Length: 218
Image (cartoon, rainbow, N blue to C red):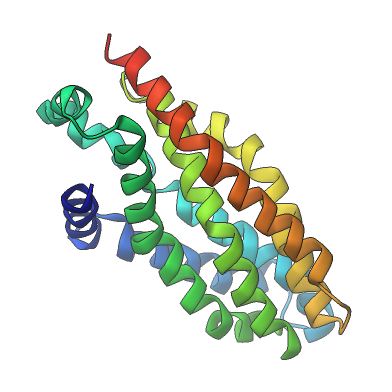
């Protein structure tokens, strides 16, 4: 599992991996929003938590089709399925590598980019906290969607259609944490719900992902 995790980390930080692509997309979204809504602080501030979370969510989508596709193409996935390593552990290692190369950089960059959207200063900390608590769920759900579409050609669009509805609870609770923090309200309730979503995904989705992989490898 450790070797699989490290291998996916190396692939993720190479040219064409999810590391730079996700950050670049996130930056573009944040820069373009003021052009569409207007530069007024009174307009940008209230919608900043939702825009930042939507940008992070879409950035996580960009590299999901690579989670299992490369291993499928070179035959490594068939070998992993017959190896003594549990397939659930393989799914968890790949989701963790995706989060390290995609989700974690977004968590670190979001507070700085939030300045461009005039997010009130109290909300910067809670934005980072909400992303740290919620982006693991995005990677776990994305790995499950990638396992469902791994045997399909050009399954990227189908993957997005499958995964986006499952992202909705994470988006709602994550944006609410940042919004409440920016407004000076207590964000503990949505933060607890967001953590529960991530823990639930951690407990269930590695098994669902391995089952989907076994079905597609038959």
